Length: 447
Ligand code: PA5
Image (cartoon, rainbow, N blue to C red; front, side, top):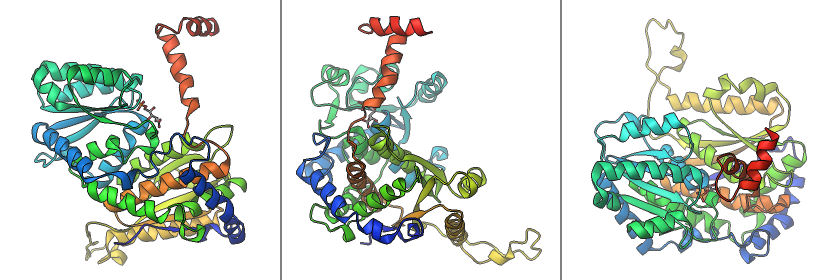
């Protein structure tokens, strides 16, 4: 089996190779601190050996639950927000047919999402879509108390019970939550739902390889064994004893920290396959929540190329020189489309006749890379041999490990997210939630 590859050479015109190499002791120490549990946030390291700890019984159990939902549902609603849905959506989108939502003869239930926003029209339209459909729900919330998913679950659970009866609903609802705490756990116990546990020491954004990601991915019909196996291979490659030179996670962490120090405050994750859009959304959460604190942290942004070359391309080429790019490149497409020859050649495209569309895409990628480097934008590249479960598993674990190391190099706790609470407190106060009386009064005085 091949491997995903990291290339950092195209950043060397901007940061010296010796400076990056000089990170060796610090990056190796940061990796050790993760493994020995001596760094900040060391109570949230459950993701570190998660892939290799997944056993056959767990996989079989997830597959059995997925089989029940697959057999009885036309649609499965995955309810969750942030780390409780992005990993599943990233994987399912990356592996699905681009027009999956239009397929009429389906082998797998359509997967839709709720609880990731509070858009009233979104929820209304979802309720309409689910009317008279056989649907199931996977409700995911580690805390079990997050407002957005809790609200969506209340609405959709009621609808499911009304449409299919309480008994059937009970069999078609699965809860993924804390082992003991939270409203979702209480509800699941009371109603008798099948449940999966999110371990205390796994934060939401590091949970894609737990049931949070694995269950929806299995329901969508993808091979969670391959996903886990890819992650295990990356876990081994970047383990405690891995030297800096051989540890791609440590190298990525080092080079992005050095770029940050040199004034490159924004990292743009680039893809050339629109299916990867949500991989970028997952990555944005991972790095944004992990590093954006203590008034520090690279701002994680993302673009889909070549689409966004026609919108953001100008800024990237000639705007403020505070950015660098990390390109996710897929070596082999799944399908082959050849450009046909046209005798009239009115569109002037005969120079492309006989070439694969992917060759055109690859030349766009190479041309953009060279143009952006000329324009002062350092480029890093992560190449996936193909877009499949195995390499996505490698990619997820690679980014998680690099994020832990990178956060330690930056000097922050990469495993907490204290800033996320600020909006919740205000929202509860404005909605006059019991217990928030003082905050309500203070906010009203400001309005
Ligand atoms: O990474 C995180 O911790 C967050 O994005 C959470 O996953 C998100 O806020 C949802 O929290 P919960 O799973 O408790 O509902």
